[in-house]
Each structure stands twice: as structure tokens, then as C-alpha cells.
Length: 160
Image (cartoon, rainbow, N blue to C red; front, side, top):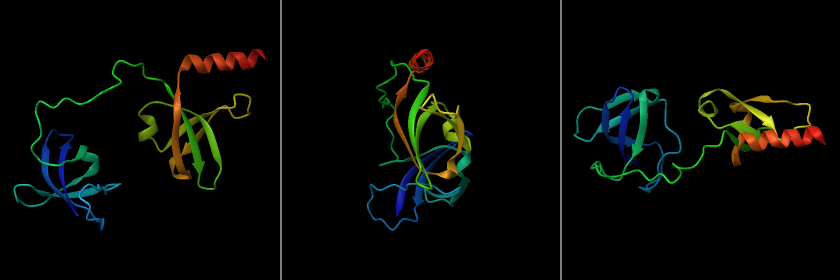
């Protein structure tokens, strides 16, 4: 299946072309669920294919047409809201164990090989744990947590 793509590279170059997905789907609305480490784009102008490493891309846009709209404004509903420092997450490990806790709401959650989880049960012996991403079969965000709310709960538990 050929997909129209616009690739913004980190070096500020932009590629316009077609990405041939390995999927057997012929649904034009269906985009790949993952991308390979190295991608090849067939340029829109018919020139020779261009191969690049995915890590060299800022983003790969799957588009309807190559004619973008210079007046288009991105829709951003939450610019005026406070960003919460923690996420409440539910983890399912590959062995079936399920655990909930809070994780930092930052880029490390996406870029590191493991992330730190603080258990919900503040009375447990576990203060925190590092979870290798490869040990998980599922990761779900349940909610947002504020730092003040977490500190208030710890104080209430300690005084009980």
C-alpha cells in the first residue's frame, strides 16, 4: 500500500513522497502502526528513491494531499490548562501481574529504556521501582495527578 507522506527531517529538509507499507491492507485510511528503523520514500516528483534513518526525522506525516495549507492553525484545546506532573498508570507485565502507580509526566517516559513507578499504596515496602519497557504487555494512562494532591495524601496517611 502506498501512502502520501511528508517527512520533516531534523536538519530542516523536507521530503514529499510515497511510503510503501508492508501491510496487505488496501484501505487508504489505514496507516501503519509502526515504522521501520530505515525508511525509503519514493519522491513525489518521480526522482530516485530516498532512504533515511527514522531517528533522523523530526516527524513523518501521513497526509491526504501534498498541498498543505499555510493558513492552517493547529487545534490546541488545553494550552491554558496546568500541566500535571504525574500520570496515574496501570501496567500489565508479561507474566500477567497488574500494578498501578504514578509515573512522571515527562519525555523520559518515552525515551528511556525503563521508567520509575511510584506505587499507589504508600504503605507498601516498595518506595519506587524501575520498570523495563520490554517487561510490559500493556500500559494505560488512567488519570492525571497533581504534586500537591500526592503530598497531601502522604501527610494524611502518615498522621493516621
